[in-house]
Image (cartoon, rainbow, N blue to C red; front, top):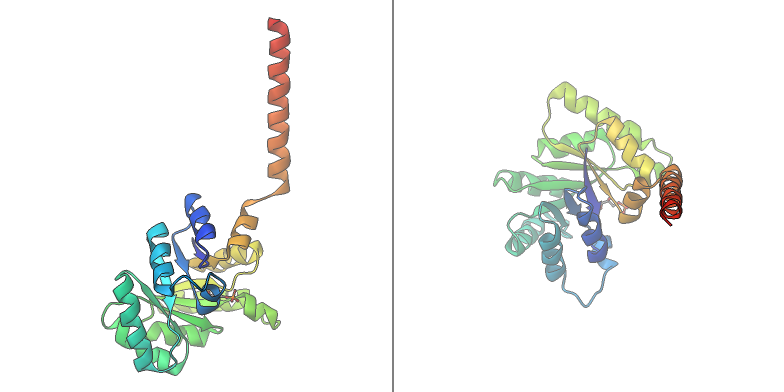
Length: 223
Ligand code: G3P
């Protein structure tokens, strides 16, 4: 399973990219709104792309197909490798189909069910973003939705990439991978949490303590 960073924060993106474990970045209007409003969105997006290269999803805010397509043209003028992020609404399907017919990659977002994911796939979406955290927030089993979507994909031979989104913690990453997601887009905090384990820290401390103790004993012998 590939990992993307779900962020518009340059410091977090820069650090995550330096670890060599992410293959892209996803943004959305809420993530962009968290950042410095004095920085133009276009400039921030171009900065993010310069940092990571690879996949970068940029979301439209129009709710009509023509508006979405106009925004897509604008985003693609910023960088032609952009993936256009479009909400899973009927107008979004129309826009997705038109963009897919031009071989422009689309990440259909705000997907909460396998039937929505199926529609997004059939509209030509390259990525279908299935939101886990927001499903769990209302006591719906998000892992089951990923599993069901994967089962349908495998049964039907569908090509869109299943992107687990709305990740809240490392267990979502683990369960998304186990359930068959192709990609998981992860907030910086959850990504860093997923790398840590108390036994790793304890073990490293013990290794270093024993090494230094050995060095001290060697030094005494040489004295
Ligand atoms: O960016 C798409 C998705 O990952 C955002 O989910 O629930 O963290 O706002 P959420």
